Amino acid sequence: MGTRPRLPMPEGGEGAVARSPLGHQPETLAAFERLYATLWSAGVVDPRVLELARLRNARSTDCGI
View 1: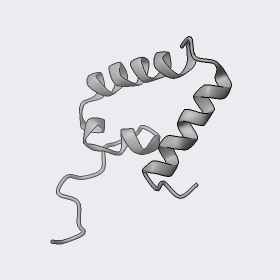
View 2: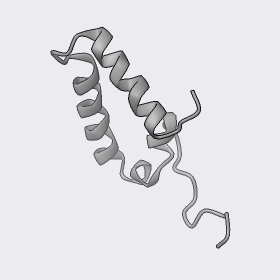
View 3: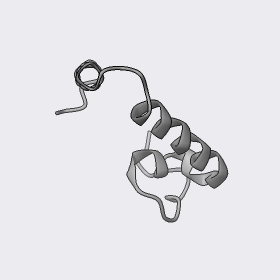
């Protein structure tokens, strides 16, 4: 299997999601980013618990933090 992407990189956008296949659908990407921002910034979970969840997720997915 080759390492060359099958699709060209989407124009503009920042972050991994904008560079993913979702980046080829600007309207869907914008809706996803609004949802994601709401879930992570306007939630009812205590900020310390939220940070622990982020760290746990990063560790379980081996993201290299």
